[in-house]
Length: 266
Image (cartoon, rainbow, N blue to C red):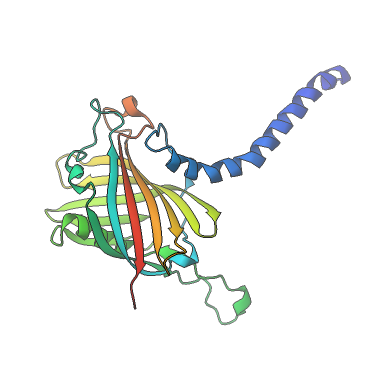
């Protein structure tokens, strides 16, 4: 490259380097703040959250470990693309509006991968807090659908992000977490967003969709051990749906819940 060409390109290269540096320095903060902003913008959601591929399980803060009595109350539901596109079951879900659903859930300590006695305790990995997905999924499904409607909930031992719910009538729901993001704005507040790929089996034509669950958990200082949460579940069409290109990344249904957690004495 001759001297004249290098002289012409140098300012452009410097600006490009600065822009990349600004993007790298700002992107982490933008993503970290986006989940809080997303909840504040409900129901004006026009796209999906900034998430990354889900690897391993979702890690929760230490103050969520234990067994809880959870009360879930649907406080709002919106069909942003109605009447052109409405999610199946949207209208029937209105019956749950303002109705508290109570069940037990628990968050447990994940066993560290290294348990060798030759590894000093000071360098062994700490036990992460994870959701007991099978326990929680079974209890929540029974609370909403009834004791006899749900037969079992199975979590793939090789993939904690894949869950199979077996329903009565030879029906099955397969949910796989594909993407995830987390945010920890304060020590007493934890926000997470997970995107699931869902397949409903048991009918002549399996139904596929995509579900986002974004939840902000807050540890309450006024009541020992209690936790409150603001949760939004968004339903998206899968690329296999005939109406997919009418919606693309816009949700076709939004459900907002108020969650309350109270510790269960062991």
